[in-house]
Image 1 (cartoon, helix red, strand yellow):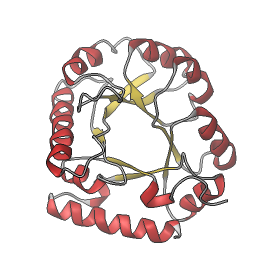
Image 2 (cartoon, helix red, strand yellow; image 1 turned 45 degrees about the horizontal axis):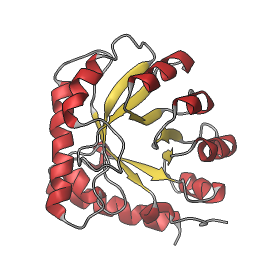
Image 3 (cartoon, one colour; image 1 turned 90 degrees about the vertical axis):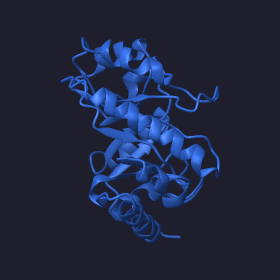
Image 4 (tube, one colour; image 1 turned 60 degrees about the horizontal axis):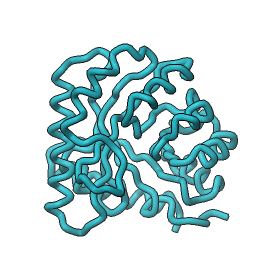
Length: 228
């Protein structure tokens, strides 16, 4: 299916989720996760009107960045090894996976401009997932004040892969509450106004629970090999 058709359906679902939660669709940003598709498919997404693209590996991001440059806004959404920072920094507009001081130090050392970073939180406590535990987040954010190239724009999480709606809602709600706590600290370097949560299988629920950025891959651009 064409990206344009997928996008229209997703936008309709977002509008319905916003109506249910008394929100405005303009407050939700769609990030097309293009990690499993070709450059051509990513290009199709941009031409369909997708403004934000997300990649989780430096090789994939660099290949698409070389082809598309500044047409989209770039998000690095995967686990970021410190040694890979130099490859992607200043090419991406957002990093969704800040979860340790060593990574913050490397970003701050390599960046020539202020980088928007999400603190990744492992709300579900699953061992397979990266991120800080919820009770570590406040102290971690406070420890970032000396890094002048880092702006904490929000929090990010990955919910369990489940069809249990209450499990999903609980996860997203906890991140929303934690984001409000950080936001209320009124830290200049950490406005923490964004919530990056929700993917192809659960983005509508995430929006109802406050998501401002949803990371959608399969439902929007398809799976591996699509587009070439």
